[in-house]
Image 1 (cartoon, rainbow, N blue to C red):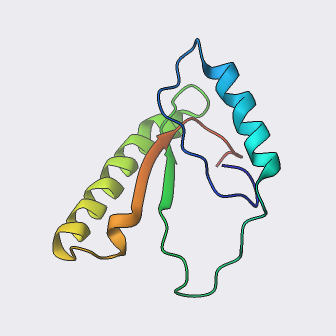
Image 2: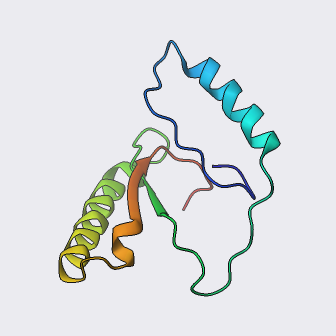
Length: 103
């Protein structure tokens, strides 16, 4: 993700290829046009929800983040089952390391 840009999805990154892949991402993001602002009901792409579950940066994330991530994933799963073909199929829930402020 980069501010004002669409996300780039990279697959099969390893420790051996991470530097090369990140350099490519930087070059691609420089060449992409700015992200268009969408009005209500116009966007139909994926909706990413990331929850910090990393314990070393902030113990609350490790203690409560994993439970929250599990609960959100379960809720999205339930809503997909009740409303097949709905916007819930676009929701992507992921776990990340701490990336912002605390508390």
